[in-house]
Image (cartoon, rainbow, N blue to C red; front, side):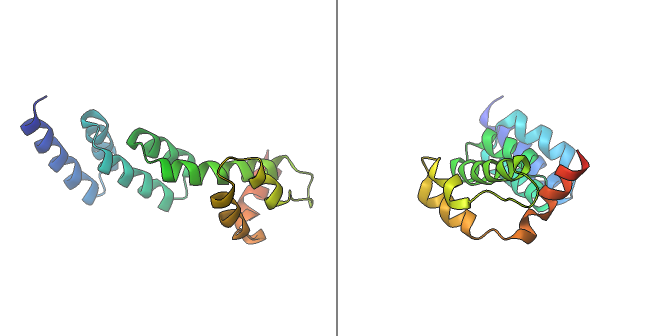
Length: 126
């Protein structure tokens, strides 16, 4: 596809996204490899509390900041999921195992038990 066709498709994708036609917007943004649109889809899925889906869109868009941020949260959540009920891992220990120590340590410090409730609920269901 040439630049004019790509621009026309991107406009159509943006219109679809703004009209909440996420399926069409997704097809167009993927086909055109429109990074800004893929990031917006990631943001959309984060708002819908679907971080695993969002991660895929941030990955396609090459948004390293969001990938690192979500990766740290996934790592901590997984450790909580594997922990014995009532014994949450020390967030400081979790962040020290990662090369991005400072960033993750600050984000993990902000977590509280209320944020972990959905993780604990899923763990109980499984």
